[in-house]
Image 1 (tube, helix red, strand yellow):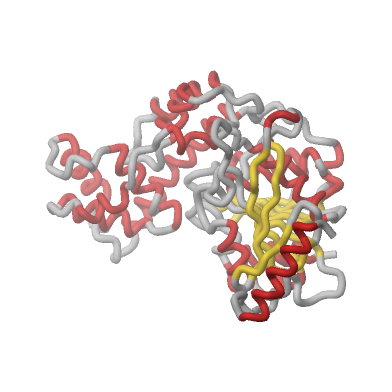
Image 2 (cartoon, helix red, strand yellow; image 1 turned 180 degrees about the vertical axis):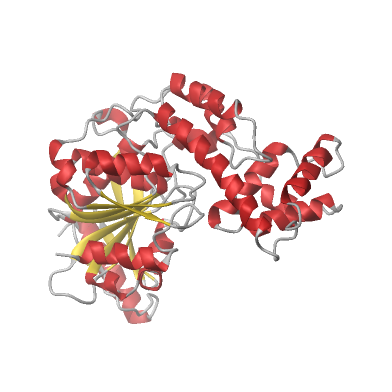
Length: 414
């Protein structure tokens, strides 16, 4: 035992004796490997692992990735399940671990659950000068580093959005190291990002029309009587500056991203109605701030500069149907200001055994962010199980009860 570990154990013993550390089911301090030291933090354990920024460049330095663990409390031989949160939507890594039983049910207590923060998150901050190195392939390397540090031959995975894409890339490269995986709304890391972007644009347009149809069919929606007329009035009010100067077409698109994508279309329509009636405050609360280069790091890390330009132009060329969702044109345009990625997606070649991996792929049929056609094509190409969900939102596992039950059953199956 090293001096650091001896001192660490002594300090923890003193803390336990004096009541500084909380008493909980995971109150015992445990050092599992040389790479990870687990500490009690509430009802879970917290740890960190240092991984290479670029595993192929020894001088690239390292980044510290936060891990959150909830140990299994049932079953004789628990598997290891990695939870991988999306970078933008849904719960963060710590929340996923803390609320695992509430979110996924008691089946998850059969697993040693470890939630992994994605590069660039507040609990996985990149070193100065490497802020843009948060691409999917780098994060796939992080998963292998975590698996190796845990000293397990195979891992199970549940990933959402951008991290589901990371998991897909990991499985394509390391199919024999995965017991089972549930991927919620991934894109294809082995196909052209530009071609996929064109399908995402169509999904966004469909999402706007679906939200409008919902409003027209629900009396609770304030513009139920004539949705198109009220949205046209909003556009006129913006052009004639009858609303607050902070309300622009781009701002409305950001407000749509923060509402419709989470299944809260009524919140957006209520705010637009208020703005049309002279009260811009509710809509201003929803719009947030315009995207900056920092917000674009994740997207730019996965595309070449040429493809980023093409994607930005494709989004900008779309004439919105009443309004659009998100800021993709602006975000991809910002890639011109960011160092070009050295590991863009699209050229990854899946290992032959990846097609026999046990993978369940979910997507909401009305997803407004990730095109269901992209996800369906990925599942078909890889011969993975495809299970779309009748819902109008982005991300479904942990949000739709039937989908969540099916996902946990799939992971727990022998």
